[in-house]
Amino acid sequence: MTIARRIACTVAVAIFAALAILSVRPRVTLAQLSPEERQLNVDSFEFVWKTVNDQHFDPTFGGLDWRSVHDELLPKVENAKDIPEAREVMRGMLSRLHQSHFAIFPADVYKNINAPSKPGDLGGSTGIEERIIDGTAIVTGVEPGGPAERAGVRPGWEIRAIAGEEISPLFPPIEKEFKDSPRKESYLVRAARSRMSGAIGDSVKVLFMDGSNRPVEKAMVLEEPRGKKIVFGNFPPMHLTFESDTLRDGIGYFTFSSFFDPVTLMPAFNSAMQAFMEAPGFIVDVRGNPGGIAGIGMGMAGWFVEGKNIDMGTQRTRNNTLKLVINPRAQVYRGPVAILVDGMSGSSSEIFAGGLQGLPRIRIFGSRTMGATLPSLAQRLPNGDGFQYAFASYISRNGVELEGEGVSPDVEVHPTREALLTGRDAVLEAAVDWIRHQHYKVE
Image 1 (cartoon, rainbow, N blue to C red):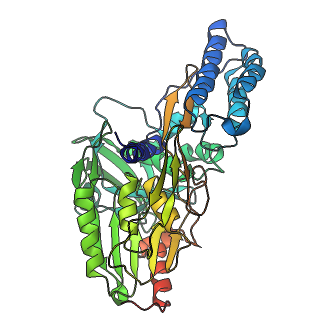
Image 2 (tube, rainbow, N blue to C red):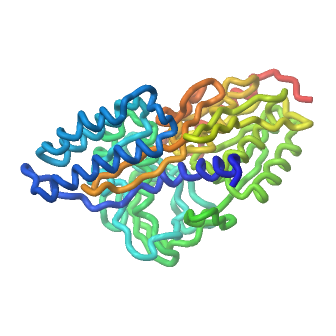
Image 3 (tube, one colour):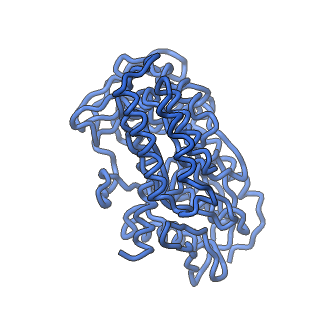
């Protein structure tokens, strides 16, 4: 496998590492641990240390003596009186790396993020797109022709309960645990979304508060999501959708669900660009896009960048380095370009937005992205906690490490329930207003 192919594949891993958080059963924390439980903490510590030792992309650990860290902290784990104390020792060990994408998460947090799984718990969808706004789950989009739209669900409705379970109590522990993390929004959304998923043909009852704040219960039969079904490596099947549209004043617009299937996606994007070469502005919407193959974003960026040898950043594993160079087009779009992002934009979406940020004529709108640009893995530890670690680095063209930080938009705009209920998209409106006030010459 070539270096480029290997990097492209590992970028895709970040999507599922960021969103498909482990479902683990919580262990009971005891005031005094049994010898068996104490050994599970020690085994967890050793697993964390060895994984970093063997797979960290920097074999020097930034000058840190990793073996000495092990020898210093092992006695503290051995003498920890409970799992939280052992967890803090492991977190302290990882904090010595000064890299935010290494983390230990309590088992009980996972219980809130993921609903209990059952056989066949894959594939079915209500067609609802949701975000957590001011502590409540709000419908931000409804798939055309999908179960939710047929049931009469509308953007701006609050999701109050799923299958009889109130969902608001799920959010405070996640808010607290991830309060400083750009991944907080993805974990909050996951808490609601996982409870509305299931096998195709299953039925789910959801209690909403409609636009007049009246309770409305809807029963929806889960269906296969729209779009082209994509199978990439050993990952679960995905569905690719894309949409091109002409907005107010002739502004071009393109959105798509993921950076996969270049044979289908790139011709669609290229056709949109050719159709809008004389448009007064162009918008690329990657909100909710978890990413995929980095090379697709590099190809898209070639429509907006003049000049050669401009890169979107660098990826480095322990053994290889790859600079993500933009492939310039013979004909370049020279109008203003807005890129829309949010907390559900991850992986290649962040590399695309972050790699173009700061270049002439390009501006980023929305909210901070997921901060999941690195290929990473998540595993359950012997004591029941979860452990996430990265095995490659990504540095943006501006020298910024986006993992654990995300892309901060040039113009921060958040959706509101009030706007959604009136059919307005505040982020899109801000981008359109910016484009209308630009005076670039489009040739």
